[in-house]
Length: 448
Image 1 (cartoon, helix red, strand yellow):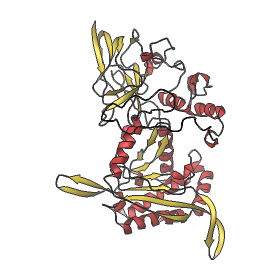
Image 2 (image 1 turned 180 degrees about the vertical axis):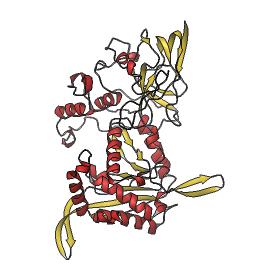
Image 3 (image 1 turned 90 degrees about the vertical axis):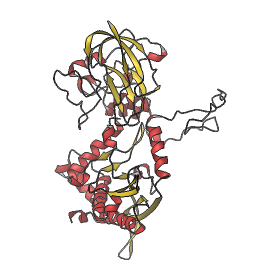
Image 4 (image 1 turned 120 degrees about the horizontal axis):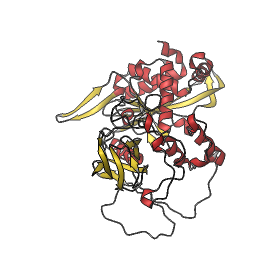
């Protein structure tokens, strides 16, 4: 019997590190090939890692909550036989179900393992050292994104009534429990904390600072995962691309009428429809009229070049429990209205459940951020790295609006955008925003 050491693999393109979220095994546990042994969090997604070895768990070499570099050892397994599989990466089909594996193969698209391995992953809670804690809800049937959502919302899974297949807890079950615990939580004004200040570090200091007094007046939040990746990307964008922002108010009454009709249409009966759908179509339409909006500034050995993309990988900024994610819809220009609505719905649900794959966040060409869902009217968003434009859609409110010389109540919103002035001149960005506004004012333009 030999001891095998499993190192942290690169589960995404260019991954350099990941956080150990939850160990699924403890020393002494028997594991088979492809049994899920640990859940990790990269800068972009939650991933389950399967065991490439069969045998007995020896030592857990990284504690939960620790950030581990790719290639670093994380666990030892005393192999019972020469049964070894290549490490695989967790994945999901486009519908959020486990991706299928080759029959009889040693490796699978990790996420939920092979069908026969499902039961082996659900072990009852046991007593462990702090390094090897298993949460009290470990016996509950729930996918990793659902467990992550429950942790973020402060919901104990053992208190949730499951409604999913085979007694599994669903996303809706967790949200319902959280809602019952605190109705309209976001509308409540919290008590003012006793401490006067909080410090959130944004970078590791060059030298170790003097330890702060542990008197409860300050809290330190480590910068890692999605927050670390977002901070790095935003700093890089802000200090490399000269941002210019423009905006205009829009009478979106006809957009609201179209959304209302689509919601009652049999063709959209099973799809969520919102003004964001019309906004997405408007951006795609306007990009075709002003292609430079969809271009990118590329630094080269000889200087620089501007690359114009004749396709639209439409990014949608999504606020999730893990932080800001910007997955994109590939080749959005080829989708019908119904297909685009379905893609937006799938993108949003996947992001909120923490199942967005790294590939879905790469290759974007232009982004929409819907700040209206937070009640904001307008903003000057930061451009996503690798792109030259980002469009913000503000809240749609009834306001007085002059129509044919008369003041009438209309549904009004503000369309704003930030652009890379190295690539896009003022006339182009203004024309683009005006085109987006024109479609929101008259969606019939999409028939052109």
